[in-house]
Amino acid sequence: MKGMIRNIIIVIIAAAAVILIAASPYAVQPNEYAAVRQFGRIVRIVDTPGLKFKVPFIQNVQTISKRTTLYDVPLSDVITRDKKSMIADNYVLWKVTDPTKYIRTLDAIESRAEERIEAAVYNALKNVISSMTQDEVIEARGEKLTQMLTDEANSDIGDYGIEVITAEIKSLDLPDDNKEAVYDRMISERQNIAASYTAQGESEAQKIRNETDKNVTVMKADARKEAEILIAEGEAEYMKILQEAYNTEDKADFYNYTRSLDALKKSLSGKNKTIILDKDSELAKILYGQVD
Image (tube, rainbow, N blue to C red; front, side, top):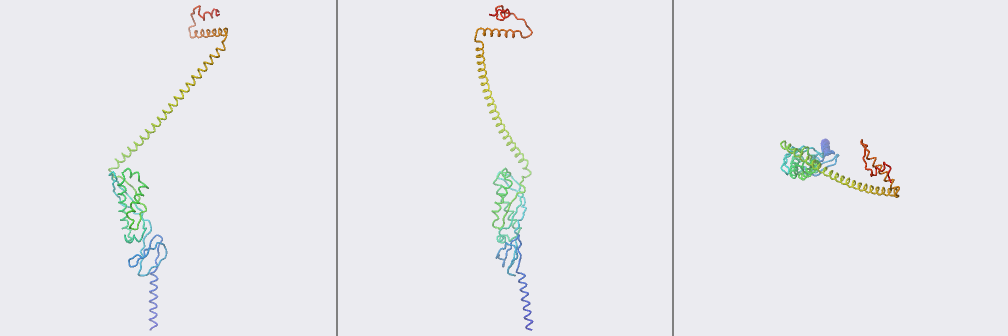
């Protein structure tokens, strides 16, 4: 009888040991945290993957995702500094960075986290957009505006153990009744800018033309001056040559004779070949052979 009781006790102890051993291990995946809680209190956070152990029945494990989560934020109507209404459509990429804070403040419930993120993004949009004019908002669209919104949103949710990786604007549009007026104004502004560039270009072109005309005028004046100098020098050289060629009385008479013949030849140009000469003229003397 005693042997039977002893065997039963051994079996009970063995069964309890098996149950304790089976309840002790737990696995942590690479994309999650494991919060080990004892009587509701967090005793440790495990952030490395693998097989882990806990105290059976006293401790339990709560897993929290490490993955980046996409949250599509509802449309927001915001007002610019110059009192223009704009409609923003955002999405957010976020993740848990401090699981202890995440559990204590939000009980590690994703929907609660997204409620806080939605409020933070709306406040960020309101603060950023209200500090800029509509034109400044349009010019800042892209990386600059995304960084401003991300930084502003993170300043509101730091106590929840979560982080906004990026707060992207899918679209930043105008209410339908404002679009046409804004587009017309933008077109007008671009036309004014284009006209300004055109006027500036024409002004520069006119300066270049004026400078070119000035240079051409100076070059022509210099060329004329040089030509006149060369002509004067040529005439002087010509007169010098004539003087040297006809420096005797006979040479001078021959020169006068040839000049008279040239004059007579020129006077006979055209259809009229008749000339009337005074008998004492040099030409008459040439014709009558009376040249001295």
